[in-house]
Length: 86
Image (cartoon, rainbow, N blue to C red):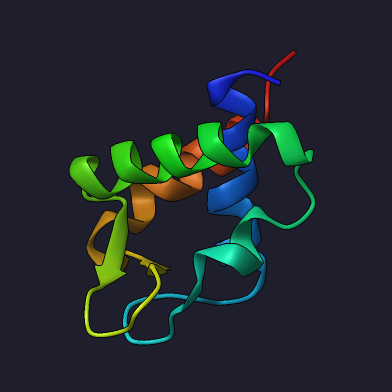
């Protein structure tokens, strides 16, 4: 699975669960559905998404919690509509 597919998986899963802004979830929940050997890749992709500003992180918890950035909704919708690719 490529980083593009993992990126799509993370954004789409949060979008389907309506995790925007203050509604956040544990990253463990987001990475469910991915093969075990790609969880590390998914964490790296999530870090990239946080740096890009597409994901917001919740630092006050012991584990990583993430949500979609409502200010980047158009960009997130574009990535989701393009699909996971090949």
